[in-house]
Length: 335
Image 1 (cartoon, helix red, strand yellow):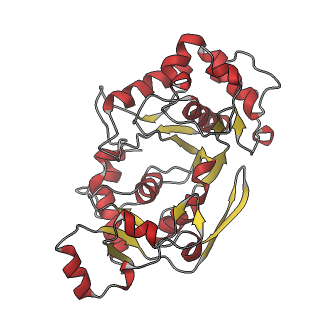
Image 2 (cartoon, rainbow, N blue to C red):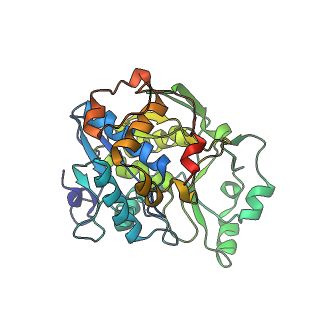
């Protein structure tokens, strides 16, 4: 697939959905620090799902946030993935520089997609500050995020002009009171009433940075991604992404939301967990030992044993995977 043809505004005026065919999966890390064990777990299962179906693997770098993303982190991720034996067919960097599989290089494409949504008359400017959002949050919360009340949707044109003199607006999309459901490959049936459960959500931030919800839908559609394997923390985002995909005419991929890795105390991992980043783990474990540990945690092996990624393909059975979040042994935190 020629990603330049998909994303170049000179080559076509509108984005087109990717072709049907063999499974195309992806791993889409954010280069905001060294990968930790949770990132490796996601990369491994995405790779196993795709490779076990004889599919193609895409490596996309989600570096939308200019304040936190660094090219050196992206290059280190690629080196870590190679060390683990998790290969890919498309994407990543090119000669040590960002390619068109880096979201920071795809702004013109997102502009095209945003223009198509604006043409539907359902995108509007939002001038709310963070304090206003939290003060006026709706009583129903989804994953800890406030459900937007639609305050700025009700502004008059005159009020919008006045507010824009003092503050650059974000752009939100107005969602209908529509139920959107899907069959998750691991978590089962999931549904959400958009207006009640998520509210109007942001497409572009007030600083001009495109929001994850829009960028990920545009990229999955344009890159022909047919299978999305990612953490269970993104489960509640999926109905709104399906909503956007339908509006933009992209096919809906199969979604598989895997459990999260937690500390022994039940706390979600982050890149601040230095004992579990790849820099520390590579000093203590071989890639085969790490992959075998993760395979045992998620139910693919009865007990940890060193295996390569290719050897794990023979052990891969989605029916064996655990749905619930997984607590890591305390021994991993010991030096």
